[in-house]
Amino acid sequence: MDFDPRTVATYTRPDASAALKRAHAAAAHDQWFREQVAQAIVEAEDPATQWVSNEAAKAESAQRRAGLAPGRSRAKR
Image (tube, rainbow, N blue to C red):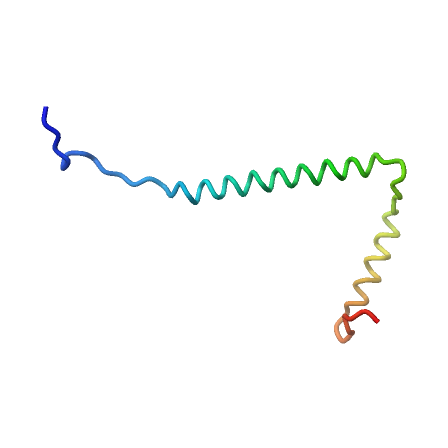
């Protein structure tokens, strides 16, 4: 049997490099996220953790937003 390169069907493959980069980035993000969740659980279960009420958090956030209103300097005084 003789080989004739003209009879071989050619095809292109997707860019494996880009796909692998996306896969590695996704895996790295997943690992980071899991580490963040694990750390948050450790902090939440620590008896020394000081909890802030929702009302106090909203009040502090509103105060910060008011300080960033247009026309006000963002520099700390």
